[in-house]
Each structure stands twice: as C-alpha cells, then as structure tokens.
Image (cartoon, rainbow, N blue to C red; front, side, top):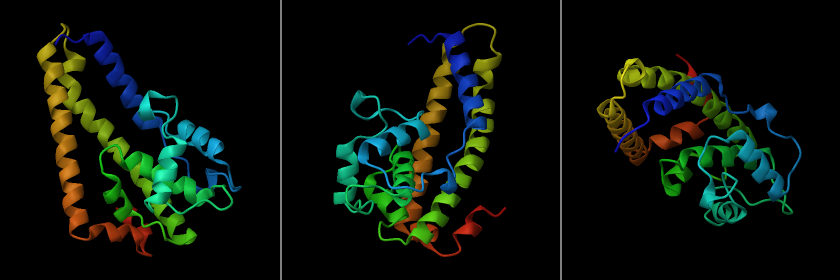
Length: 200
C-alpha cells in the first residue's frame, strides 16, 4: 500500500501539536449544574472531539451507549433524567479508556458506586495523567516517526514500520493494563491517596 508522504508527515506534525496543546477539562471546568442527555452528548463531543465517532455519527457517544453504561453499572443512574458533574467525569474516563479496553476492565478502574469526592479525586488524577502521558507519547512518536519526517523521498517502508511500531506498542500497553488489573491493581485509583498517583 502506497502512502502519501506529505499527508502522513502533515498528520504526524498536527497530531504532535495537538498532543502538546490538548488537556482534558478539569473537574471545575465541568458544568456544576445537572444536564439532560442531549447536553451531555454535545459536551462530551466537544471535550473529546479527537475520538472516533460512535456508529459513524457526529458524536463520540450515543444516548443508547450511555443508557447501556447505566444498565451495566459502569456509571451511576441519572437523577430525574439529569446528569451531574460526576456523570460527565465517568463518561470522559469511559470514552477515553474504551478505545483500548473492554467495558468490564474500565468498570474495574472506577467503580460506579464511588462517592463524589472519590470521583473528583480520580478524575483530577486521570486528567493530569492524561496530560503527562500525552506529552511523553508525543516525544516517543516524534522519535519513532523520524525516518518518515526527515526522508526527502516518499518511503513507504518507513511509514509501514511506523504503523507496525504503533500497533505493537498499543497491544503491549493493552496487555500490561490487563495484567495489572487482573492482579487487583485497578483499585489503586479508587484509594483515598489517589493524589499520590501523579507525584514524580
């Protein structure tokens, strides 16, 4: 398969800039008022606009998916059909993690019966970790993509190697996550000392 080197280079540079600039909303940036489902969908799509769309639609999740998360006890039920800041925090974490993990594993990372204080602490830790990991990841991608970015001629094998490296790294990180969760390490995020997760 032939790749358009100029397009690949442009996308890699754009992705790197995005990773360096993007940050998940903080807890205090999430609305402090309860929202209806359609408002939740709009906000999630704004916050996570880089994620693939559900079912080829315009949004990163759907009402049916959110209803399923409630039924599966991945997130708490709405109160009078309204969703709070806690729901938004859960949904941001779920939408991000379900890109690589099954819902059952995501559920183990953040149980749906956590108190608002606990969800607040876990969400803040998650948002900070996301920024740190994104920055590190951007550096790793730049290093791995150097043969593509510096090549004067279109080099399809360099693009192919980058694709393989990305796929292998994704599968290894997924395996590591699954192994740690199977050892009971997922509960670490639910502990009261969640703030320590981000300390250097």
